[in-house]
Image (cartoon, rainbow, N blue to C red; front, side):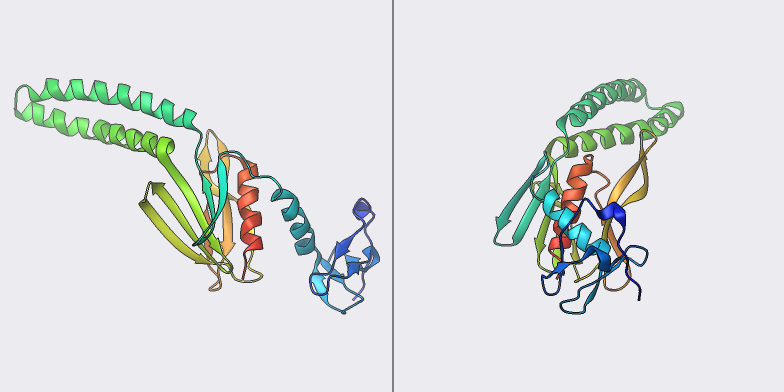
Length: 228
């Protein structure tokens, strides 16, 4: 196998072998094949993974805003909360929408008739929209997304207080962890998601509700660090 040095890497002078810790020579890097040879232990490693590990250390140096990281008896706990501004807007919209809907409901319910029954059925979607926006406002204002990580395993919680959904997933050694575009959009902008490769070939995906790129990168870096 032929290895060669890429002049674009000249700004970075030291890389360490993940197996033995020896310094790697830039002339032993094959950028096209994404491989690097360690002359000390003769191990061939993926160069992109070594670069990513170095970058992860820089990312983990500072905790993004709206995020907290604590060590608990259950593991490393990472909590993210949405900005309150969007929740307040949803709450005001919900109050206005539900007020108008209630006035319409009372007007229709004054006299029960076949026509009024049709009117009640017509108002059902408006009631559902009002309930949905109120629930959304409540979640944004008081909800949280919490990751609990232990070596090789993760647990994702989304909800308010202790009420919500919990999902468990594996963090296998060498598993692919990346940030990719999702199928969801907001204001004509594609939302990104965190993708975790699972042992069975499937993926565990989450994080479209995380607005800050730095927060997604921080979570992905922590997941890579906690792989078993």
